[in-house]
Amino acid sequence: MSLFQLLMLGASAFFAFKIYEHIQTLEEPQENKEEDNTKQPQRTADAFSTFDSSDLMDKADEALEKKELDKAMAIYSEANIKAPNSSETLFKMGYTLGLQERNDEALEYYKEALALDKNNTFIYQAMASIYRKKGEYTSAKMSLNASLDIDDSNPITYYNYGNLCQDMNHKDEAIEMYTKAIEINPDFDEAKEELEKLKD
Image (cartoon, rainbow, N blue to C red):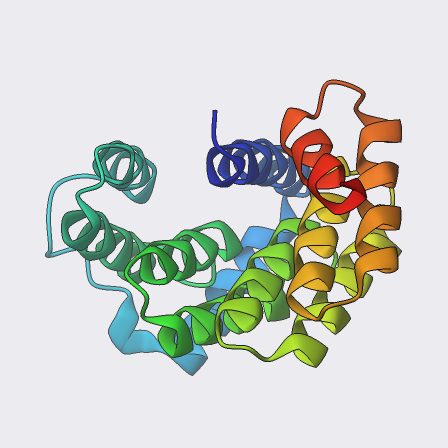
């Protein structure tokens, strides 16, 4: 399983838990519905298909798994119209755009998702990945630090931080980050490989 797949798996589990929490509060959905009607009434169309947003998300996830990125993006967009203001949908739209190297667009969706879910480490990590690809290392570092402020026990965050440090030619800091990732997950082979390269 690749690191991108691990990130998506973790993000899906996180969003599933957030949805469960949201269902427990019966007043919140009505609040959000009222807000949606005042802010963007044009986005509440059900005319696109007979599928509800949950079914659409499943279909988009399947397309993403098959690397059918344009199809996945189209279905996520439809789900976003049927059920706007979902951080999960916005996150996955950003992720799909990132895979297409449409980095600026991906960042915009990640920022929208983050505005709805400020304590989501996966969004910060995904943003850091885009910033790193763009060579905006300071912004990438800030995003990873924000992710660690929320959860400092995720080995993938330290691994990604190590990769960033390598790009910045900060060898000692990269070694520190990979070491931390392995301390948390002793079976983290990718981190071990990078650490060995730096120690040679």
